[in-house]
Length: 119
Image 1 (cartoon, rainbow, N blue to C red):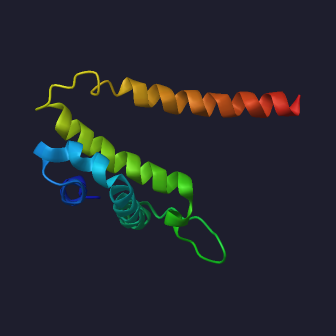
Image 2: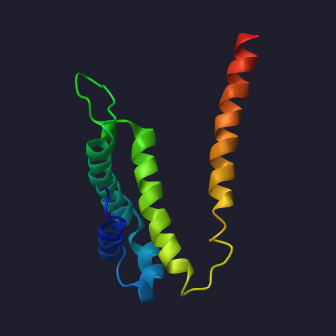
């Protein structure tokens, strides 16, 4: 099982102390680059845990598949946001239904697109 607390700690190291997380704006590209590397690490653990694979150029690594890298980023950031939302009293951020709705809307839109394309 993936240790989400470990990834939270790594993200905290990337962003800096929680009290100064707004300093991220000054180092945005650096933070994104490091988050990308963290997502690769997370994907590798996810692959080991689930057995999922994605073939590209003879390799079977899921971290090569951009949607799964973005999923890994989302999972890492969701844990971090969950942690931060409590002391910062960010109740609107805690509305995880928004994430579920966005995912469902994207999935539904794909099926509608395929339906319109075929008929």
